[in-house]
Length: 319
Ligand SMILES: Cc1cc2nc3c(=O)[nH]c(=O)nc-3n(C[C@H](O)[C@H](O)[C@H](O)COP(=O)(O)OP(=O)(O)OC[C@H]3O[C@@H](n4cnc5c(N)ncnc54)[C@H](O)[C@@H]3O)c2cc1C
Image (cartoon, rainbow, N blue to C red):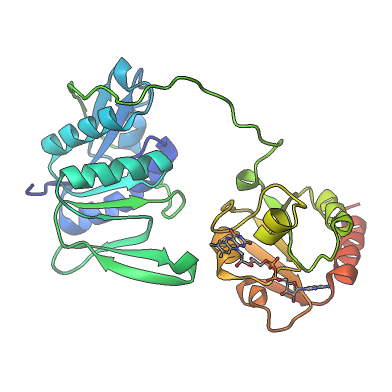
């Protein structure tokens, strides 16, 4: 495939707009157009893709695409790639996007760099990427050596561009796609609490520094004052059974404005889940605890005295 464009796709529209931001930068660098894909059934608001930077939008609107299923979506993305001839293809790293990207890359006989948090083009025109590895403790730099360069990008790695009144081409494509090989036989809503940890703007979190389950009451009081959701480390949930869900590489990845880590050591497995927190406050009685390194504000002290004191002070302040 010769390479005439940067092409972006995600079934999550907000994420696709973020891809348009970085896609524009890459397209300008290699001097190509920027194409976006809109796939589904009853697609509306196509002009938004152009407003966020697409020079060309490929629309495949078909009732057979109303539900995501990887085989038809793979056929459609491949057909769009045949038309657009992308040099670079960026796909949103959602669960579906990751499955799709791997299959598309395999069909195009190329590689796939996954979960890229930085992207650039080197002097040979190859796509370079930075990715977190080893549970987020190191950053690897990779180069894609084969065109088209395929990469997946997680949400919020790049900013959504400013919308502007620009013009672009909207192309409707009819594609004969493979029928899905998986049938959905039942759909059940996930049972979750009021607000998920992922969406919570403030989280107070417990680690093994808490000696007894009853002591979590201290954290509950702090959570109440801050209007926060409570989280914890894996041992607190999985080993001690004091809570149901935990934060970290094998648990929830959170992105609150404020994360208060109480009695948490800050291992890489936990740190991988709080990387996107805007402000981290740690309370830990060991000066050398890793969590202090990760924090914007560190309190070296005993959670049994600091947490109630903080709750009291905040209660006074917020009264
Ligand atoms: C494959 C794998 C996946 C994992 N995934 C995750 C994951 O997703 N999330 C996760 O959290 N962990 C995960 N872990 C576990 C991880 O390795 C750590 O064991 C865990 O994060 C440690 O939890 P902690 O900080 O609560 O406990 P500890 O490491 O025991 O830390 C407790 C901290 O509390 C401090 N402390 C003790 N008493 C007090 C006090 N009175 N006042 C103040 N501070 C005090 C101590 O100084 C210490 O730093 C995973 C492990 C593996 C092997």
